[in-house]
Structures are given as structure tokens and as C-alpha cells.
Length: 227
Image 1: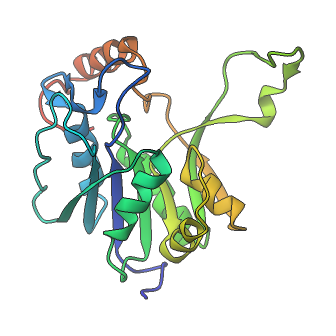
Image 2: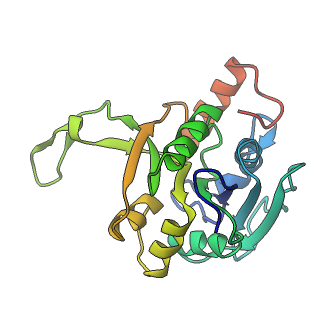
């Protein structure tokens, strides 16, 4: 297998969710003239030798195939019932010579090039896993009472990056988690946190689409899929 400090980067774009909290599969909705998933794929392609897009197992509205970006090896696979299962399906399609594997949620279409670069650099420098994160602005309380010290917590984003061997080994354990750095950490891997970006919001409710669309309009990115 290639040395992770120099070998190729592959990105898994997870687009298999049903969008239950949103009320629709938001990854296939139009965002300022471009589908959400297509924006996510376009940014990932600028930093990857190859891409795997994980699609829903059942047809949903707007689920037209994702076009392969030019100059990038491209594969599309069917996801699973859980996010972790969908990542495993995508990972199975990543070639063995991949050194660094990124996992990105299609529902984060505003991830910047700088985030990709920081995550990849952290893995190249020796981390088993790296995740972008941002500080918590709100006061946090436990439901049962008591305040959580927000200085001790951060909000995690994607893309998350991994030494390919570490990610494969962790997923072979069969663990489930809401993100992949947790799967790797539970397997004993080292996790590095890098700076995220508040613009890199996850489309969870319809108002998030409004915010993302306004951002793109204000920054002249209504057309085209670049971030």
C-alpha cells in the first residue's frame, strides 16, 4: 500500500440519506442553480485522485446520477440503512493503493478548499484521522440540569480525513457512530482537530438551505458548483 505521506487521496461523498429531519433528501435539491450533491462533488474533486459517491438504496426525488468530474476516477455505489454502513459501502469501492481517504457529507455543499487542504495535511503529517471543527457559540445545558463547559467541546464538520489503513481497520470492527473519526478513535487511532469554517454548515432544516443560498448569492457563486 502507498505511503500515506505521498500516496493518492480518494474522497467518499455520502449522499445516501433520506433527509428525515429536513423533510426531503436535501442532497438532491437545487441550491442556487446547482444540486447540493453536485456542489459537494465538485469541491471534493479538486483535492482527489478518485471519488466514490454513495447513493440511496431506494429511488428518491431528484436522484439523477452524479456526473463524473473531468480528470478524476469516479465510482458510484449504493448505500446502507445507516451512515456508517454507507461509508463502508463507499470504502469498499476505494482502491487498495489509496493512501488518504476523505469522508464528506454531501449535505455540506459549502466546504472550502482550505478545509480540504488542512485535513489532508494533518493526515499526511501522521494522524490516523483528522476532522475540521468550530468553537461552540451557544451556552450548552444538559437536559437533566447543569451547564456544559463550551471551552471543552467543538462542533465537528466534514470532510474528515484518514490514513486509509486506519480507516479500513476501524471499519472492519463493525462499530457504528455518527462520524468516522469516532469509529477510528474507538479502534485506538489518533485524531487531530483542525480549523473548520462556520460557512461549512450542514443542511439539516429548510432554513439552512435559505442561509446557504444567501451566502452563495452574496459571494457571487449562484452559478457553477465551485465553493
